[in-house]
Structures are given as structure tokens and as C-alpha cells.
Length: 103
Image (cartoon, rainbow, N blue to C red; front, side, top):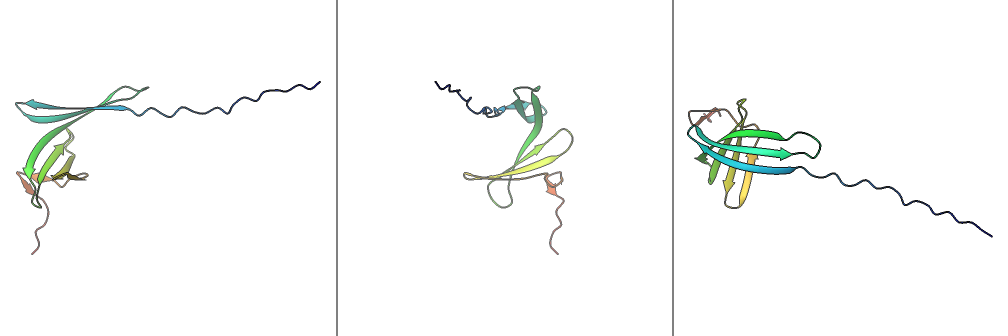
């Protein structure tokens, strides 16, 4: 008489759950703000705050400047259905860029 043993199936890890992300735009007297909240399954939520300013882009379309409370700036260009971003953006003072003009 023979005895057979069953082998266990190989253990497989469950895929890591992606964090949930939420976005809210708040219009305040001090300006418009973008609030990004990321909900992590095993860590506290992370919240990022950006001040939002819109302007016409020099190369067409619309430009959006996102400024963090620490002063880091990001520029986003939206033209039609396309988007392009820079990180971190050039410093802008009073609506002018610190880029050097060609002589």
C-alpha cells in the first residue's frame, strides 16, 4: 500500500494596495489653493498644500503656477488636451521670469 502526501501550493504575496488620492480646490480671500490628500493603508495621511495662480503662457495655452508654503514653485502648461510640467519652476517675481534674455 502506498501513501501520498499533498504538497502545499506556493505562497503568493498580495499586491500592495495603491494609496487613495483626493484633490480639492479651495477659493479663499487670500487666493486659490490646491489641497492634495494621500491616504496610505498603514501610515498616517499625507497632505500637501499649494497656492494656485493662472497666467497666459508665452508659448501658447495657459500656465498654472503651484507654490508650496516653503516657496518651492512648479509650473504646469496646459494647451488643448496636452499638459507639461516643470519641477521646480523658475523663480518669478511680480509676474516676470528670472530667465536671461538673449542679447
